Length: 219
Image (cartoon, rainbow, N blue to C red):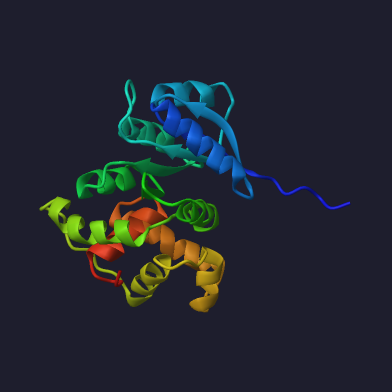
């Protein structure tokens, strides 16, 4: 008898009831996913998680009453870093997108996204912990320099660190990246931790943002 494959658990957080219900129904139809709960806002989400409804992914709006997407993402990143945040919002401005990624979001979609891209984003976040659509990548490129701190000091990177940054922006897992670089997974992990320290970031998304801002990759 074959063992049942565990489904990825999702909580949908959006203050618009019709949108939230529609998203929940859609996610429930996607192979490999199930909706654990719905939340009206960040505070409601926080209460549900603290009551042991802990998801793998939170599908999150930005504009919500009581506790918005910024506050919610920051709280999740601090208290439940293993929970991955996928933003689904009407807001398309560079500042909002960049801020959500810096707070710990793993992906950002607009609410006019089609179901196929939503599934693609969820799969990417499960597989490699990040999803950057062409649209969001373009916004990051045009906005990162604009909103980067002026006193940011240059960082010296060895060629292997630059190579790792370029691979980090691909679809590959860290294990696959190690094979491409002819290194052991442990060595790649050491390089990654060194980059976290040097660049003052805490996630793969932070590494991707740095690589884009410093033209180490083309998007």
